[in-house]
Image (tube, rainbow, N blue to C red):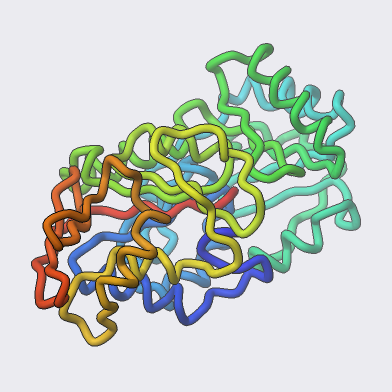
Length: 319
């Protein structure tokens, strides 16, 4: 959600809430995936009316709206200590997430206070992670040396291969999770859960760990309130939208005929920011808005009426 659904100040705007409500009213499912722990996503459930599974730890933990575990994918126990040692070898601070708990060795280290404020709970302090190697959902390497983060990612991929998923979720965070805990698997999980084809899912994200999610969706959007590191990757990403949250996408997806109706001129202006050239069309004085597997909502230039076709929108945190 950080940098995409919420603002850089971690505020869920009225526009974002209205956007999700518009999707729900149009019969579009809305789901969240994040590198955050489940408790760090709890504050969004009620305002957004979330009823779909929530993918915490980039899919390492699937929970329902009451934070009850539906499915869990953890780092193999014999790899936890080697991964911790690997992160430390690049002078990264290491955080460990296990169940509902977050452990740090130093509560005064960089980004701890900010993260605690973001997720609305404080970490437990442990100088050593001995005895915590089972059931680990995520390890995070933290540093303001962004080059060190990048090098640690590359080295982790080379050293551990497909035994774990290692990716930068922020320039200063390196997330390590189970190989099955990635946003691509989240998209696949939701597709199975709601009997959807991948082409019926739209995904939104702004970081390298979102790219796998893009590969399992019919539409994708590289969105960010800062320059997205995924700018050069992903199959159908588009121009970023800075600082305006979810509002422009709400305009692009809104079904015609509602109380918030935008005219076609605004649709023409905003739709290319969300959909790729292969996913929208404007011809014969009719604008076709794609929903699902490039099926369209067709509305005339007078914006008379349109029928909503249900699909799923998977919203990704930038983490």
